[in-house]
Image 1: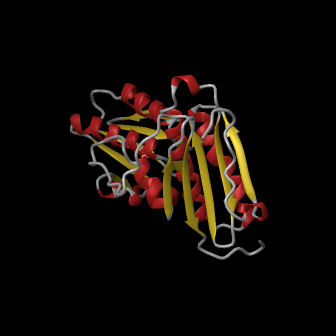
Image 2 (image 1 turned 90 degrees about the vertical axis):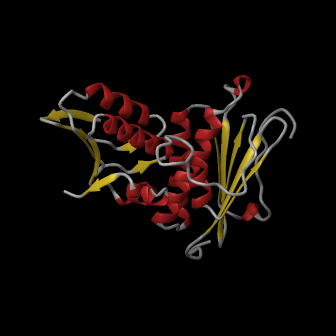
Image 3 (image 1 turned 135 degrees about the vertical axis):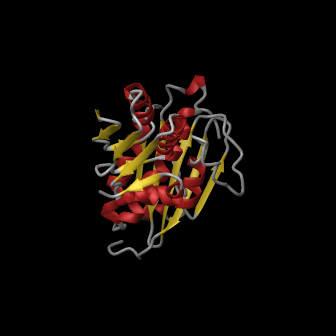
Length: 100
Length: 154
């Protein structure tokens, strides 16, 4: 997982999996990397081959974190596998999914 | 079920069906490995990518449950993942050493802001049948799912 800031955007890339062993690190590392000026967290999920309920929990946790900062969480270019799980759990209705 | 080694699930007729059985240490990393190992076994039986995705996710959710709620006295006891592939169905079993739980008849999604509580929903949704059988020293999560295409080479 790589995390870097670009102005108000915090980019997270190289997310191969979001599972019970990796989700806590994503949540904690992103929270630790947030700066006062960060308004957007972009999770590049174009390489994410797998997500489970723990991974979904991390996405919701980060969405809530950003909401407290009046910011947004964006799921960028999710793979079809990730989209299927988001749709199955109806989280695609509340998480911002963007294609770039 | 008596104390001692975990029994192997043998569904009727399974002696003629391709089957999978592996023990895993009681860790979340091993739970993920268990699901990946099952997925690697299943393609040889001609399942579609969608079916493989469903089995991988359902298995990891069940296995995570086996790890997260294991009894302290059973942390050194492996959990067991089994599967048997038939012409029309795939059956999977995960044996755990937790205190067990009562499987609700209907599983609803939690509120959006809840960070947990989706595992059981995924398990039920991804399979045609999900039963939880409680035993004295071990419990069995029994999953079954119809194949979307008939077996090509069984």
